[in-house]
Length: 388
Image 1: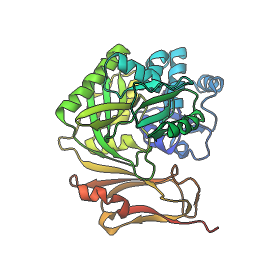
Image 2 (image 1 turned 90 degrees about the vertical axis):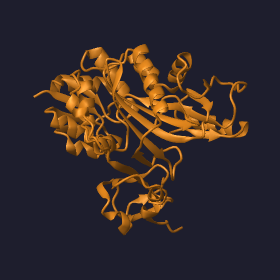
Image 3 (image 1 turned 180 degrees about the vertical axis):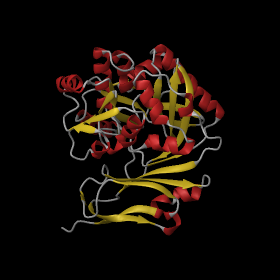
């Protein structure tokens, strides 16, 4: 039996781990955090640091690993690319081209050069040059995901504070114009530099405006979809991208899409499950096939004729305190198709903006705007505030 080593093991990687096992691989996970519940789904695991390259090489040798696979995270992905390039195992872009896609400034520079759909921006170089940029601006570290270190500012005073905040995460900082529009994701699978599968979703922020809380399947305007597809295929050709998945986050304003983030690792918070449940596809198996250098099976990406309408809802508290349970209104109980609880009753929350309590998938017969608007009233964490 061939073996895969996944750098990761968090709840975000559970479905990826299952896909590897269903494809017949002996699956080992690697990650040192105590809350990596994905380890329990693997055949075996190492509770070790996935940034320790020498340790990883030793495990590859001892376990006779055939392939490396990244979990849902920027560090695991770049580590896998670097090691796979060095050891010639797996199917990944060159490390240099992977850096272009996963370093926010390099990606911005690449897009501006090739006239792709992005907002204007510049790299911060210890001095401010705002002659070509207009407020509001968004400040973000070049190599972080999940909104870490990111701030939207409206004036120079706020900008100085935001720069200091971003430097806590990374000394390289991107400054770009903040586009005010609706947020969408565009997930594709490419083969021979062409898009062979695409999935679009509308995304929303609630408690933390830098973290996506809710997402549901949607259809984009034909012209917008074509423009995004063309942009992806330009990237694929210019960067000689290997076959596999590619995930983009975009803001659409006045029917113009602006690409704000991209990645070649699976999106977080069980987003791949949303794809699979809506389209009745085996998206993650196709991801694993691509990472391992196998031909992507057509059957894995064969869409159901009628797309299902599902919402992936991430549950966040609206304040710090003791988590009691999740309130679920009777109107929604029979619409929940799956639920993953991440903390138990009695847990004390001291960073509510970044503490994910659970993830719920809700299926409706069709898009219901009123339901979506009121969703956070229909299902939410019940919190008792800490007494002083």
